[in-house]
Image: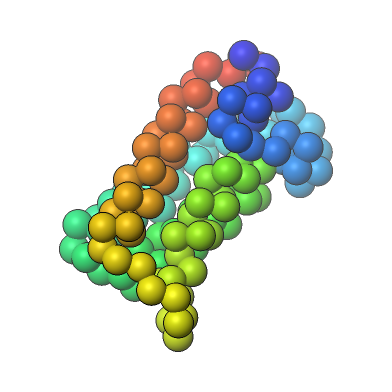
Length: 121
């Protein structure tokens, strides 16, 4: 699978990644670092503790990392999930809906990591 095919499969924006990182070589240098990013495990841990502040922080970090790598689908989902958790937000989200979102985000994050391993340099 090429880098561009990877972005198509994971709902990413290859052009955005290329605009930030300039070339496939740089994308291939930084994309694997996503597997080392702690935001996914921090999100899971915060959910298990029902720590909405921790979930906000993990989602915010994930959104930024994913946006910088052109992983727009993940960035958008993380951004949507964090908004009701933002301090001072008037948006409300039930624990059930938050759980559904967190589960979906973690699953997509894991699938993205798995697909990333299929990229051929």
